[in-house]
Length: 210
Image (cartoon, rainbow, N blue to C red; front, top):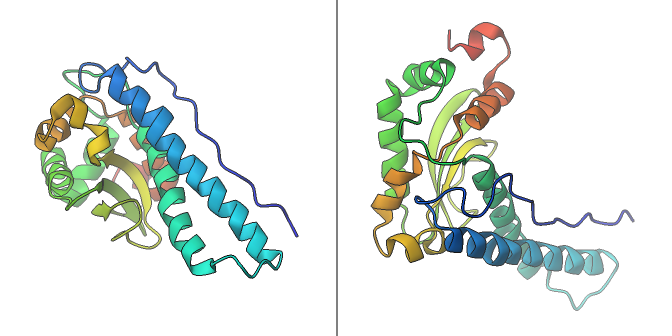
């Protein structure tokens, strides 16, 4: 039987203080080294139990493993995407013409897309994420509760925003909306554009939204 590969905490491409003042160094460090690390540890723990079950250990509760594995592994994967789609804040953080064209094609305008995404993030009930994803070349905004509920099967994330309280509460207290509004200063549109090309583009004309 092939050994199940474990996951590890990804290194950030920037320092913990690089996203200030939108996200403080303290929050970034806690978020990455404690919360994300917790999802990595939980994933690996469940993968270890899954190996035991496959090896014939009847004391292992498969249903419980699969439920917890879904929670922890998706937490790990969502956070890994989250770190990648941010960079140091910019007051005038504008995407490329290509991204603007694609958002205009599907949402009516860049402003309408940002409004829809922000409303989704602010309106998540409890803990969760706002996600811009693509399914069959169709961009969709989703609300994901926790890390794994209410997602659309087969949709590939282009941009994610963590609105669990641990992502913002020490900086913004209960003002989630302020955090969501400030997030747009951090978006790494180059990463979003790269993901759009990987997921949506079969031809150059498609990549240009034509």
